[in-house]
Image (cartoon, rainbow, N blue to C red):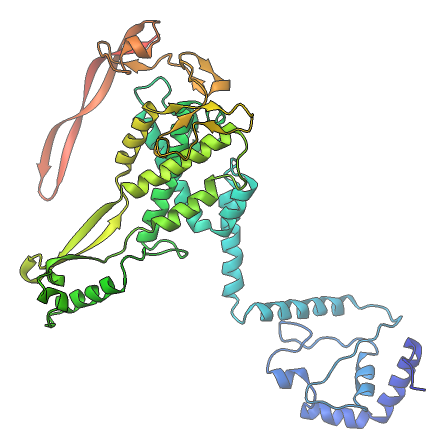
Length: 462
């Protein structure tokens, strides 16, 4: 029968006897540095990170020397056996320091890597924690892609500012969606089925798509870049155009021999086009619900997001840059750029004014009739609830009323006092405003103006 594992007491006695017999041999080996972790690894001892030698554990050296009788390897294996000996607090501290050194070594030799990683995770979490309206899925997306999320937040602020500009003459002017610079995407009106709700949903999707696509084209995001344009034949033409721009002469292409235009007579894709495909994909993951919607409000929200994303991609503009000697436009390289967002807001406001009131299906499945994927409704906004007049403050509707709103006295438009004040009448108030006057040009080179007070009469709703 093989020898069983010795008990702790027997191991200590055996270790003491072995240490007495090999005391001289071990001292000589210690001088030469055989089997020492310090000599093999070229660093500090395994006990502490500061380079100081760790205190010996009672009975530890004896057990190590006893085990060295049977096997002697280039790297000494340390076998730790627990005994009833009292613990040394300083030894425990150094053991913890050794584990900390090993953990740092696994993360990398450079201490900057873990520090930067921890700071980036901390900064992303801190940024995401400041957005209380994020759902759990959106919060996870924010932590995983903080740089894309920052662009998405810029798109949300862009959409809210555009909403206030487009509806500044209406009874509901988007003022309930922000307060003191804070975005309020949990506003009550976004939980209703009004045409204004559909407009805001489409504008938010358009703003996020616009901001992310623009950031991709500017190289601000690591997860996306320039959009891929053209086929292999177009890439070949682009390489020839680049050769022409460097002053190299190329033989004419075979297509030009048959009467077709040569590369220098046409324009080719180049530059850095906005990556609308990535922007639309991120917007879907960020704003659209994960599961298939089964209620009318979620279906309206999903359709509005689709309309907003599509408007941005359809209004993308082709911008070109001329190339050639002496300022001539011998050939051009063109790329797709994001459209002016003011134009996007105007298009969506027009679609809000012509939105379609859809009725729910009789089967109570949350579906609309007619179907949203029909050719007639593919580009139109839909809503399922008639809008109130928004004349009086009502928090349940997301309305702050029109009391105290400035209006135009004789205008037949929605900003007129007869429409905006809801028949309550208006008051005339005198306001003193500061205007720039007496501007002078000073060499060189700035314009200095003075502020002159001016008195104006303003109509305000009662």
